[in-house]
Image: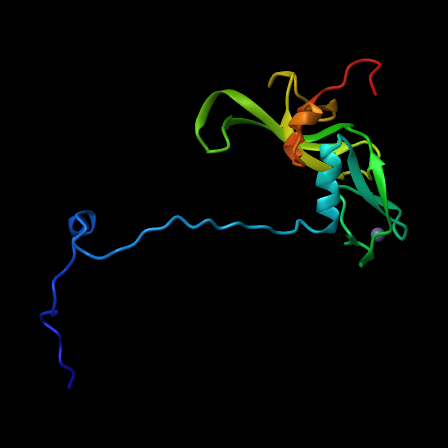
Length: 173
Ligand SMILES: [Zn+2]
């Protein structure tokens, strides 16, 4: 037979007891520092972004140019072979007109986001990004675009070193 505890010994604490300092307590703000590695391919990709360049990896077995770069070819099941710069121009592969911001709050003026296939990489090798200098009525799949880079001093090795992709102007490459 098990005995049930009908009355706990001691006194329950309330939030007020804690706030009033009736209970011995200590507080501290941890000064925790974190560091992690983005991996070989992603680290180089981010470093190059800060320099205003896009870099890919080539695979000599399937002759593809992989972007974003990766050290292992998922088709050939072998390590990739070399680094290769690609262009900062490309083609809109798909897009969304979003009336939600990054925090899922409603916004009046939509943001345009989607995938760009970059020139110099194999087909369908793209990156997700914002689109700018175009309206929701102008954006099209297949539209030619170019990266709008932040000025060098504002870049920090992030995909947001490119502000957005904007329409490619006539005669521009
Ligand atoms: Zn391959």
